[in-house]
Length: 225
Image (cartoon, rainbow, N blue to C red; front, side, top):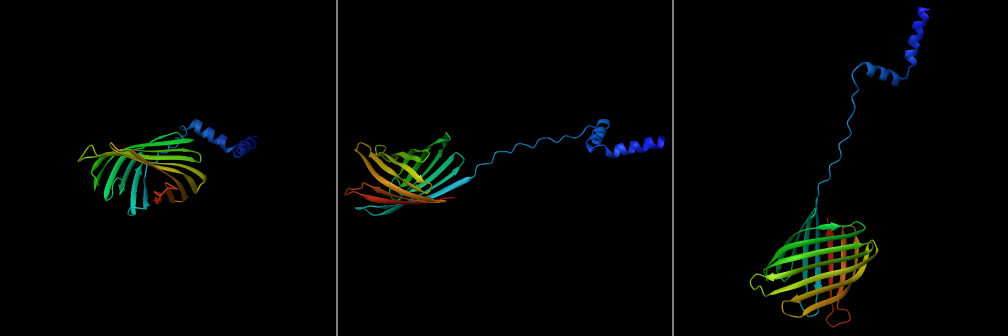
C-alpha cells in the first residue's frame, strides 16, 4: 500500500500544472520579483530646419535683381536673413519666436526684431503670420523700417498671399505688396500667383498689376531641409 501511495503521489506531482508548482514554490520561498513598467519615452529634442529661397524681380523700367532669403528654425526659435529686401545692396537679419495655435485651423504668429545694414541702415520690428484652414492658406509678412541716421526716414512694408490648394502640389491665389514711406501716400500693388510644391522644392510665379502698363513679374524658388 505504501508503495502504491508513493507512486500515486509522484504521478500527481508530475501531472500537476507548472503554474501550481510555481505557486507552491513562491509561497514557501522568497516573494517573486515583479518587473517595473518601462519608463515613459522622453520627448524628442527639437532639431534645426532650414529654408533657402530666392525671388527674381523682372521690372519693366528698372534693373532686374535677385532677392535671397535664408531661414533657420529650432523649435519656436526663428532666425532669418534677407538680402536686397529693404534696399538694394543691403543685408537684414532677424530673430523671433513662433507662437502656434490650433490644430484643425492652424495659426502661427512670429514677432521678430532685426536690423539692416548697407545702402540703408536701420532697426526693424517685424511680424510674420500664417493661417491654414484645409485647402485655404493665408500668409503675411510685415515690417517697419526705421533709419538710424534719419529717424524721420521710415516706411512700412507688407507682403501678403491668399492661396487655395486644389491639389497637394498646386496652389493659386492673390498677392498684395504694400509700401508706405513716411509722410508720403501709400503704394499698394496687387497681383495673381500660381505655384507648385514637390517634396522639399516649391516654386511660385507672381504677376503684379495685370492689365496695367506697370505690370511686372516675380518668380520664387525655395528648398527646405
